[in-house]
Length: 113
Image (tube, rainbow, N blue to C red; front, side, top):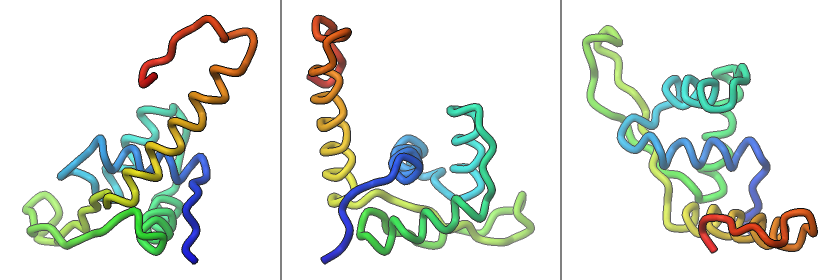
């Protein structure tokens, strides 16, 4: 059976793939991670996480067209699968459920409820 849970870093990377859409390639994902989280990330960590998410069935990838700014090299573009979207939704719902149970925030409403 394939692992269906996400670690925090995996969850953020998977969300960024969805946010970036057709621009979801490793270098751009790393840039966006640093921009959104204000934390440094190695391209190696992004590559290994993308590979792991693909092994779990949460992502697919295909080679994009070559571009002049990359010296004619092609980019590997990542796309979330239906299983990846379900897993993200489950992770979000679980976290919202926990936040809703936390007494200090019990009266607050979180988006997505």
